[in-house]
Length: 242
Ligand SMILES: [Zn+2]
Image (cartoon, rainbow, N blue to C red; front, side):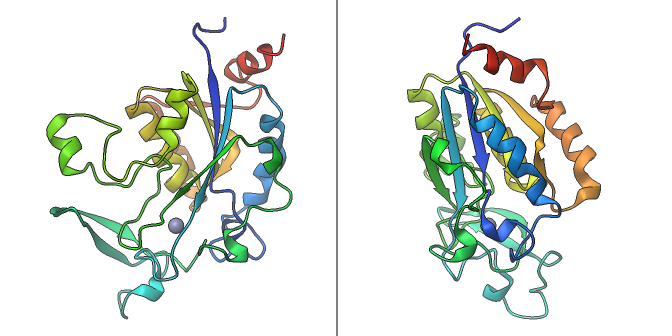
């Protein structure tokens, strides 16, 4: 039975040329497989369909080219990411090849994606000094959010939460690239912000295919539903037409 209230949104994470074979600089294996199922989901009557776009300056901190050897090996080297607003707050993050640089071919949506069906687009990763996997916010809580306990008011919060809240959204369905980084981070932030959240298996692929089941387990443990395109939860969206 469809829950009430039920106002679902589809979030399409970072389906951009650089994350896609054959030419993407950070191509996710089998990433093109997700385009037909994502296009099919874009045809459903979600209340809102929002895409995120990785939107880096050419000198972004996550690029191997922004770091000195020998600790600048893409996919394997890590570096310490420091919160520019709170130097005490640090996390280890991974280095990547240059990707999704603002305005380049790799930054674009693929022509095969039905972008005309999107309602909104949210840019992320624009701050040179901060890595941002999630479409909602950077990885730091922010001193203000930490002290007030408020999630969703971090200084680096994007427009995504506001768009969903103003749209009256209750349920969030996440697809896109890549499962083990930006899809996972976006889904976990959606749960933290109070949305009932699902990740659709057919609509995502991982950088590390061997990690897929582990990622799904972690998502489920943290309150994200892992579902398939023919699940009851997607059926609820289809029923909205009737
Ligand atoms: Zn990136």
